[in-house]
Length: 251
Image 1 (cartoon, helix red, strand yellow):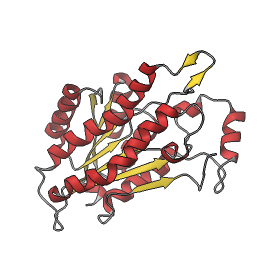
Image 2 (cartoon, rainbow, N blue to C red; image 1 turned 90 degrees about the vertical axis):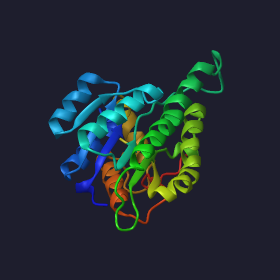
Image 3 (cartoon, rainbow, N blue to C red; image 1 turned 60 degrees about the vertical axis):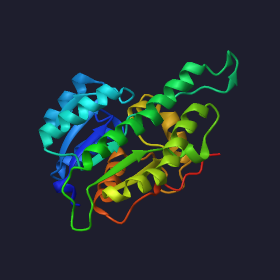
């Protein structure tokens, strides 16, 4: 599969890793539909890159079903799905204000894990109708985990649990979809300059960057996007998690 021939949906496409991926794919010639809750920014970016936009709540079956249908109608098919939608919650299991709020834990799991699965399963259903490539390939799904799945820090119980689930479902999902010619890969980013980190002070950003062995800096979302594009074209990559973190191992 060539990136220039792809028809991709990208969740969280209105900011951060998702926006960078949408821009990279479109620049390479791919058709792109952004799925996001932010209508104003989503529509603006879609117009800028010559793509499409569908307001989407990844946790809602009806919303994702409609978004997938819209993407298929406008692009003709869906051959790539990149899941970048997610949230981060900072809260200890037991802190000064008591136990970790259960609703916050559930919401993190619902968006990061259940939302990823929701989009992946419905995208795969659409991909099954694609005409196969010579090697039988019909599509590729790229999910986003985090190095927190392996090296979760204090206050990251909910986030690490959600991303650990994304890691855990990669291989079985790849095996489930193998007969349909659909590959499943997962990217586990380290510390990237996303809107969330951009809101921190420069001193905090510098401290975080100093912990990265090589190169000693924060990741650029364009690097995530480039890796996603490589995965699309590297047809023998399947059922694996790739860390992109500058050799960072948090402790």
